[in-house]
Length: 277
Image (cartoon, rainbow, N blue to C red; front, side, top):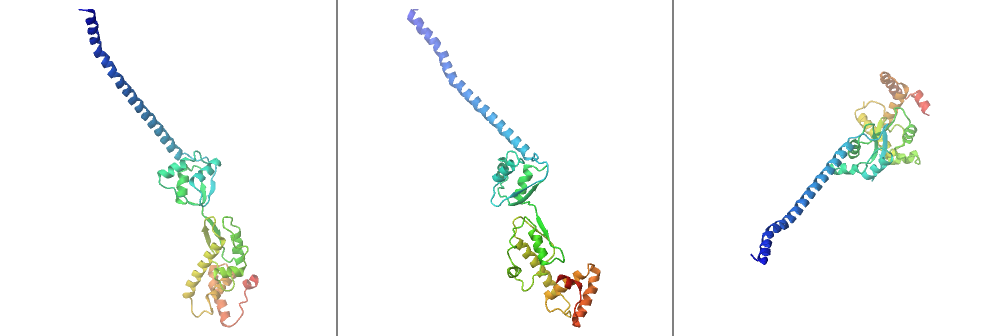
């Protein structure tokens, strides 16, 4: 065998193994890339899972409250704005997660008003209150026997009402409410509930409508022989009787005495009239 033929034979013998190695290189690279990709997916999945677990923990963890906390959600204020405000007050951590919950629940609409958070309340409780409009209910009470000025004074003491009546005269108020004559007696004594920002005039109008409705009902079923020309005269008499005695059982007898005096043209001669004047 010649020298050249030996070299040729050696080259022929080494060619197959060299080709196998060349083919193995791309296959190894693909395996590496696939492993890298799968590893990335596993890491990302772990991060997502961890973030989700933290979010669920945050959602049901108590807010930073040592005592009940009240705040006002102003008209037009966003959920993000509420979160920033509560975070600045040290009540809420990670306020940006509020929007995550709202989006997951497809409930981005929140309602203005005054809210109260009790100790132990969670971010979930907070958001559910805002979405449901679970606001603090304010109230004002008109007492039986009060004069109109006392009604106005009670309204003026309520800070959560929008004050609009102080600059108006009784004549102007009578025109606004559609009342002819004096305002005394035209407002139903009761407790009225309202949300922050309600006008004092709206409460007064509501009390007037309640009184008109009650008076109309009583007037239509009255004894036609009673000496009253109008429902307002009957209302005045009811007020006088109420002032004359604080005992419910005595009011029928007192009313009978006054009716008999009216029928004979006598004066009522009752203390409440003099006291009112």
